[in-house]
Image (cartoon, rainbow, N blue to C red; front, side, top):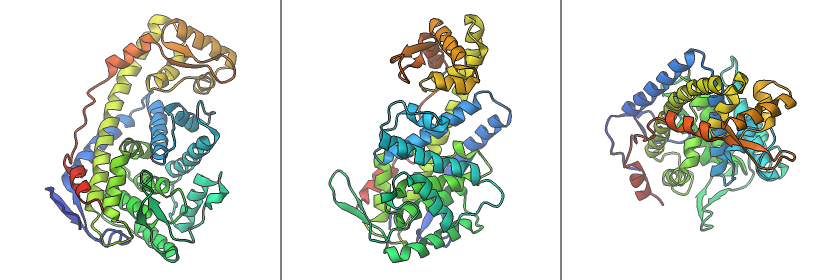
Length: 399
């Protein structure tokens, strides 16, 4: 059992998600802090914000990038954004792009469907989601539970670090998991989501794609939360930026083999740490977005560039490369008009043309004027860590 040595803890019954989690304790104070930040952001979104669509798109793109990067795929912000937009990739090779597209499909399904009346999660739905993820590679048996033993390897050493449960037990374990997830309970959605994630990744029901499925399953649980939109509740971006810590806590919790009675408290705290810091990051981005958009309004007025360009300029300020196709999608203008607008934005110093003019090679980055706007709009970027000693404790328990 992992030691728990943090205050303000309240036990959550092991029977809540009985597949895995013999003992789980939750820091109610940290949950309250996270919910307070999320309610603050939800209150901001209740009034229409011109920047909310752009921030929503880039947040989803960051989730796609984060979850795929954990699996070793090199996903640029621009290619993740292109997937969200339904555009063509800028730099990704064919294999990587298919993985990006697969994850975009299943994540979009979750974000759109999970809150609809009558949506039901069952084993068939999970298998359908898995097929969406990997339908481009039938050799990975998309939508089919594995029929053989499975081992998780440490890529740096090649050693087996975890063995999943017997394949004959997988269907019953998945039925138990979705049954527990569907049952009405008093646990907070962040706790239920964390335990769904943990159970799924420990069961490892498929030959491939289990990590991405576990992360999107956690987002699905959060999508049923009526506090904040699910795009702004996901922690996939944070996990992608903290991959080593993510692997370590799973290894410390799993201890090499399936055992649902192990203490999952460290994992839940790790998830709450991710939620806390991701919420802080998004709150800061909300404030930055308001400042940037206000400054862009002023710049458009003083430089005389088309007012319709503000959406594209905002995307550029968020770090997305702007292409003519992106501009056309954002503004609804014809390609010839888009070409003229982009040239005017470059002349004004708001965008800087890069790449070749042939094919899809030309794109635009923030020009000097826009870079200045972004620098001046940025708020405090220091994150509070609710559990500063957690990773040291976790690494003491690595197998």
